[in-house]
Length: 372
Ligand SMILES: *Cc1c(COP(=O)(O)O)cnc(C)c1O
Image (tube, rainbow, N blue to C red; front, side):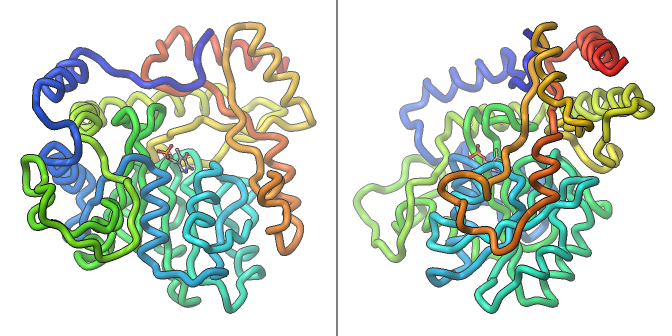
């Protein structure tokens, strides 16, 4: 079976883990600080601090917690996203307001979001679907005009750029995931990019159960004896072992990105004139694709999934609409017909760095055969 996604690791990650295990402390210390520095440099974030955590969901949760929302405050979010976006919003007592995406690029539809804004709306969580950040400047200007904070769910967009800057190097709060399938992996992990040192300090405290310790992250095991607890917090810190894997992955990131872009361009070229499909308009000079998602038209998605599965090609649907889950059924303030339509069309083809050129051509041939 050709898998739809899989991590690629090698002897470098294994050696890094071995080195980590030989140390007497595995928790959060110098290696995590080193990864934060390396990420800051890689992304070109300048003065914007990087806070590593143990998942992308934790990064979203901390970002929202740092906004000091009141219970019942609303966060605008596309219904088409991984459920982590919704769970992070409800975890801080806020209410997700599911919004439409644009049919073409599956990014948040700001006109629709505008119609759903109430006086309780305090923030917006755009999702950089498939790695495409869209028009970030336009999005931030839109949010600023409405007094909304922006928490970017950039879980798909590690490495993508917009206007000559990497995602994370601009904007308000930006959240990445380094889970096992993302553009780079720490095993599990995530990072929050904060707008200033103050918010990073607060996020750092909340990451570690609200404990304030002298020199907790200055290398070596933190002092266990001297601490005060100053805020609600969670156990969201990253371990050194995950950081060591991430540091090795970061060295490989440019090669990973180039390969992902190459495969996505090849798919685009092969599928561009096929009737029955709609491709996402993504600029691979800017975006590093996490997914290669297309829309299968004419109600043929289930047949295409079955056709590919019979030929040992795994596919995925990213994602079911969140407003249709049992827990979120009452959230939609108005119907979401575009989202419901595209959620019946989207299909993600295999995209990862373990795919060979032959496998990519095999997948293309199977898709063509199905549509012929
Ligand atoms: C992966 C992902 C997350 C969550 O990241 P984890 O590290 O798995 O917790 C959040 N949002 C989106 C869109 C994702 O794809």
